Length: 244
Image 1 (cartoon, rainbow, N blue to C red):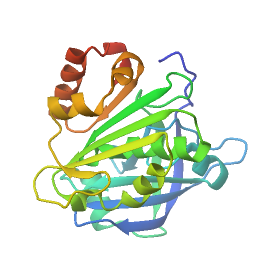
Image 2 (image 1 turned 180 degrees about the vertical axis):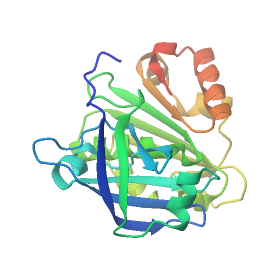
Image 3 (image 1 turned 60 degrees about the horizontal axis):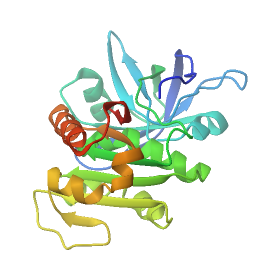
Image 4 (image 1 turned 90 degrees about the horizontal axis):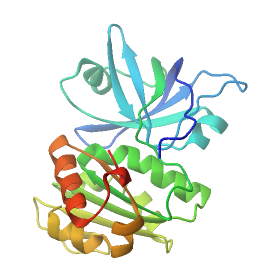
């Protein structure tokens, strides 16, 4: 999995081209990257960047695709409000046109075509962000891989900002989404249901072929990652096929 030539990390400046208030707690940002055609910003789907503000920095997973960066000099990421100083600045002070200094790409969490015929993407909360980059990439490049997407959220509104994308992806035969809402009653829809991310749901959603041959990508709170990893291993998934 890791015998891949990864893009070289670089420092770069950018400016904010768009800001979207997704909810009280989440913003998505579009940055216009100041790079040259001979040295565009490159990353693998699932990787992240560090945003640098004075003496502070914070990492954020990209939700856009490599083609957005190479062809349009645009990168996109989502930020949930926390007490971190960089995150507070993004939520409270950043405006369209502001200069943002960053570096990247970062991380061993990424998708490369050809490693498996099926991928299973499992997220909790804002952990969906790198998986959105992967799903957008698979869709955009029309990659022939079976994608299973399992996302656990407390409230349905947490998923509304990306539902349009998931609905678009689901129109293809190779994409099978499941959004699990845990803390409120919802009317069952095509891929939205009241359910917990637990051993029972993982065993139901992951087929024998997934368990035998699939690559599993997990992103979310640490406790959730540990639980899913242990459960998958108990189901027969080898640790080499679990990426987190």
